[in-house]
Amino acid sequence: MDLKGKVAVITGAAVRIGRSMALTLAESGADICIHYGSSKQEAEQTCHEIQCIGRNAFAVSADLANSKNAATEIIDAVISEFGKVDILINSASVFENKTLLNSSEHDWDSHLNINLKAPYFLSQQFAKAIHSGQRGHIINLVDWRARRAGVGHLPYRISKAGLVTLTECLALELAPEIQVNAIAPGAILPPPDQDASYLEKRAEHIPLKRAGSPDDICHALLYLLESDFVTGEVLTVTGGEQL
Ligand SMILES: NC(=O)c1ccc[n+]([C@@H]2O[C@H](COP(=O)([O-])OP(=O)(O)OC[C@H]3O[C@@H](n4cnc5c(N)ncnc54)[C@H](OP(=O)(O)O)[C@@H]3O)[C@@H](O)[C@H]2O)c1
Image (cartoon, rainbow, N blue to C red):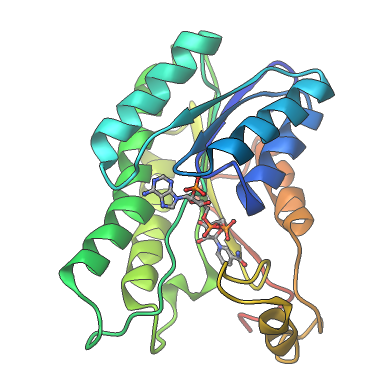
């Protein structure tokens, strides 16, 4: 897909990886809908930077915990602002270190609602908005640990495993009009409550001996969006950590 003049909606795009993806797509010629939850000021700043690049951008807030309503609000807002939508990137996420024994029903519901149910209903609204003859892309941000057993982050792992399955099933159901792929990042940015030493420790166990950066994710994103013959793929961007 040539990104010039395309419209992309990115969830959780005010800060961190979502913000980097938004700026990268704008630099490639796309207009952007920045979805955010609570980072209003950062969302407005990201829109401003996109407008400085010469592309259109606007911000929409919706609580993805209320996934079905949020999905309708977000896609309706994009259509009303730009008249169409070509690319959906599901990046917003919660990531909490809960085990079976210390997790609550709230932990289960928030991870499943925000990380899986919201992408499900956003994909549904997005697919309905794609008109006959139009091509579309859905990109889901998953995690290489999604399909690995491990202790900790249990509701998170389950939500991301579900998102991998959603990626593969929708690649079949929505072909040939819509390509559906996923990016599985490794150590890219520390969780908000950790500092850089979190990544330095992880890097010791990464074959390429470094943590990644949002730019590494943006390269993978551009590859998937510009590839016309790739669908149902989970592109692992980890420096080999999954090996
Ligand atoms: N960072 C990494 O190294 C890494 C590693 C593996 C996988 N990933 C995946 O890559 C993606 C991007 O990672 P990231 O670290 O940049 O993400 P993040 O900081 O964990 O989350 C991105 C945004 O999600 C939004 N969000 C969370 N709950 C929400 C809710 N209820 N309603 C609306 N928005 C909500 C927040 O937006 P507001 O700030 O506006 O509230 C948050 O800023 C995620 O899917 C993550 O799981 C990241």
